[in-house]
Image 1 (tube, rainbow, N blue to C red):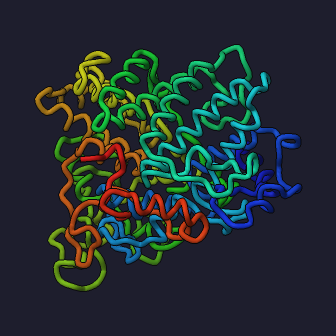
Image 2: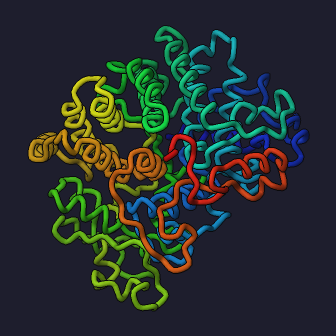
Length: 536
């Protein structure tokens, strides 16, 4: 991963990224010191966008706030008693829910978050490679990456700037309109379908691709798998469209765990290239290493079925005091001693609210932490996996009767969700035989099919530390049936949040378009309102 460090170092010298939603647009978009189509290899910019998708280089700001503080605890994958971890208390910290969207300023590249660090560079790659035969495949990969990036943004916020986003340099659209999520999803389906079909095995092999090193066959399977996921998001609101696009990809999605897409961190690059989840969970910015643990909900699920993942994803006694960042080499991975921490607790000292009065509490080291193999500074950030693909195909087969056997896809998906863990580290390996024995002992039950499939999807995305996806799929399916936390003064009347409100900063920088979007959210621009595909 030295390539990532080199590319990003080059980019940080001259790259000014902006979402098209900020002040000083003309200066930002015409600065002759920045890269442009005549003086920069777009491969470098693809690397930057892929790195940005793994999290912000500004101390993992978006990963810390959005993926971990909010999504991981709302979905009861993690639990934390740190005061600013507001997610499983259903409290609104508007700065934290805005973190994924992004802000101007704050990094050497001119901003942090999705619009500055992901949208701007990937739009640049799409624009700068269009119509250039030497970049035929790079152009199509950039279109697929753009869809991947915007899928997450719109899943979190709903209607967002899409069609005009990132185009300030090209057409001076500095105040992009917020597009309806329905229109965004229609275009995502079109773009991924068309771009995937145009990938050419005999064409260029993009050197800046940090996922597959330019392997076009893998990108084709990635594109079809992403198309499957985008289509299945619509299973509740537009099943006809979902079925149409699922049918297009059957037989052409990821084939096995070797197709998994991930970006390896590079510890030698420091905060610029380090694994974002690991940076936070190792306590680089606070005491997350000691006070953030696997949730009771998650650990109890694994223990209830003797799931072999438990012995490789969780340990107790990892940190013995709250002042140390040093991991205990004798941490206990025995599945029988693993214990998840209840959600919605704090350190207030108030009976019934503080963790110390919970019946489960003994000492903090007795609660299960993520195993060291999962939180290495040079570890992988998973983007899209074969296990997700198979479980989504199982859902489509059960729900729509297309794409083959739900039972077989479920079997293959759960097995892959166990065996893929070796991609973190050899220490997280579960043997093929052990995984097969587990699936055989816990077969698919068609009468409870959607619950089984999507509970396993939740368990998978939790172990991937992709809690954005855990939240999106839970909103789509309602599984697993999580019991909400009731925390004093919460912002949702004790219900699990359904979306992030728009960043307030947009009211002052893109005022007219922000006001139109803010005022059009059904039920108000709140944690409890729903995005289009999550309609009741």
